[in-house]
Image 1 (cartoon, one colour):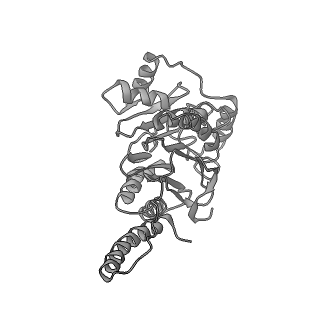
Image 2 (cartoon, helix red, strand yellow; image 1 turned 30 degrees about the vertical axis):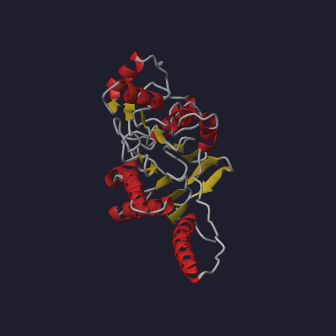
Image 3 (cartoon, one colour; image 1 turned 90 degrees about the vertical axis):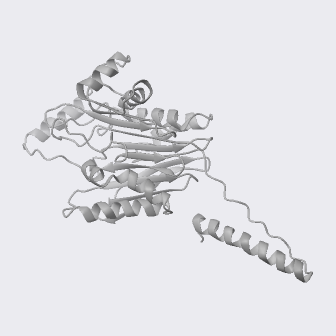
Length: 332
């Protein structure tokens, strides 16, 4: 079966051949039946997000997209669902705390004009993605952190909330018994929800939000609030988002690399594979070094790839809604 990329290439070649053959036939006085290959229509709207919790997040995003709403509104509303889910221990309310028992959150958002906002090391606010959007829209800055981010959120009317649920508190107390201060990241600690979308107007937006690695050092910030690491997009090219060990993504400017690879002709799948290969080549010890990427190009084509098995993404457009298992390099 031909890939869409191959089909487009064949269509372009075929059109050129048709013109040439028609001209030759005309010169010879021969008739030639024209065969017209219609252009491939872009898939829009479409929304992708990381991990199983992306299914519910996509539903909320789709409520916006299906009504002709913007991708920016869609990704914000989508990831808010996961942030507010107390049963999810890797994002927002109920997130697993740092080693000192504090739930700290990171998030960023970006629109089709490359406007972006982010918050890092934010405590007591259930929906950091909406604070990040306020940073983008109401300040000249991109990133606010710590107490400054909290004060800004409170000034904007966000409510202060205890994010440490009883379930996460018990998990932290059990972890403390061994006094092994090593952040955990594996196939069960999903770490992030990232979402990228295209709306009916063909515009891209993206969002990324997390409570970070469980039992991290107090003050640690990963890739999720960092534009070009955890999330990046160019409305002329496509978008990408990362999940997993943030330090590895930051070292390689992972999401920006994926978008730039697409700019230079790679498919979303090829771009994700190359980004994973770069991470693997930069790290001698790949123990628990799980990183996954998802990518979406301007035509609505998408891809995903990870270092280890177990990564999956939720996909939703007019003709499809399901989980897609990512290809991977290593078994656990």
